Image (cartoon, rainbow, N blue to C red; front, side, top):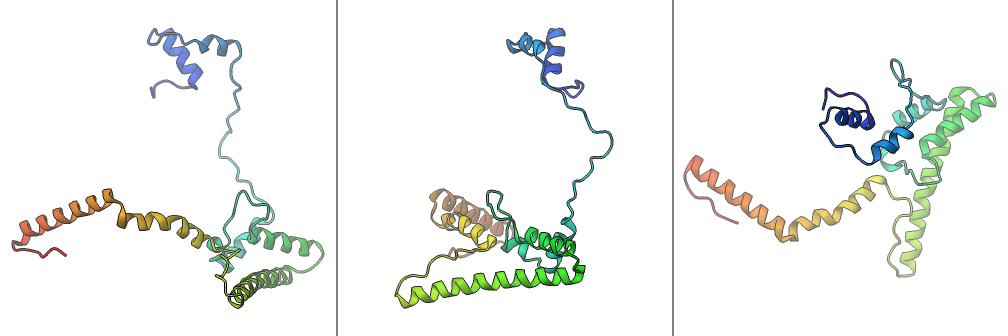
Length: 190
């Protein structure tokens, strides 16, 4: 139906007028109250830029690992560290501090926050060891480790799932058969 332009309403109306389709029940209701149409933008859509975007890019250039270790959590109330860094730089520059000094202050604050997190978790582990308990999970886990923890059960599953084991055995048999055909000779199964 690439020759037909328009939305579902227009297309259906054309098909009904051309007797290619019977009239659906909802067509009359949509003719009485058609859906809202939004104007199309002319030309290129402008990108939305915020004043702190420049400093966020600088933050990620300086701390590229932060993209993975301080992931953006959409449902979280706390903003990501890059946004905190950028807003702090903007706040300091509005107070009259030079940009270089503002970035240095925000940088020190970010590094202090990271080290305090690590020290707090180290202290939690130390207390747990003194009490003879298992150390608690890291309250500030990295995004990479969270993803790996979610995927770990699927990685382990491949060794024990009978369906996957059957596929692997079939692939091994196909490989051995191909090797026999190409080079002649036998291959020991392990």
